[in-house]
Length: 287
Image (tube, rainbow, N blue to C red):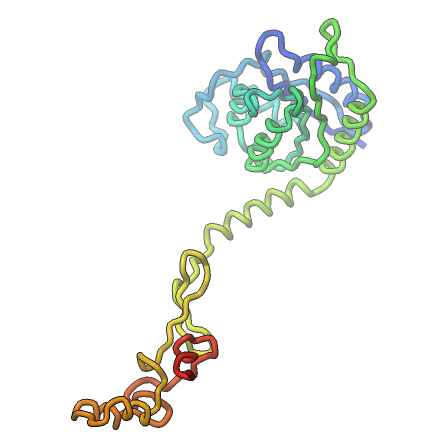
């Protein structure tokens, strides 16, 4: 079975960087894996300028030679491993710049992470990177290599690993090999596109609706429905109690009493809808 080409990207470009010896250590392990052929992609040697293409990368209409060379390097790889430090809870700017230079070349491929830093081991930078790689339609395994307090692993400019880091590297390569040889990256990209389409076409919930009991409900900002009772304003008093309130009813009150039926509603109004026991006015009317 042919091996997959694994591009190992060194994200740091500053002088005295620790990413180079860490990447060399990981490359030596990846080159021995049965599923991968390791290929180094050092951003310091590639030396990309800040994004200077006029067209959007998805059109692949590159005007500069350095963009065409970088596009060919990314296109030649089947999977990637990004070796990144953590600068102020983030990843280096040259790494983001390299990811933004091309778009189609990243699609439907897999990506793993080797991070290094202080106590957190660069994990916060990896969490930010995953947001970018997901938009680039790349799939990432849950396994990763985390190197906390990396200076203690550097001796005479070389990286000295331990048993824990060796196991983590092999576990990530195994998981990356399974993802690279499957249809999972393509499925992930299709799922992301379907979610985006569903979010764009999602309709806004109506601000007012009618409950099956006949009550008109309007939503407040808190989400709790507010019920508005469609009946005669005031208490559900019978005509007798209303007449008792006025011993000598006037002409206007008499005409009102004549328009009220025994069930306590106006004849010219819409059909009466029963009140629920939770209505405070109903409880007040019952005494």
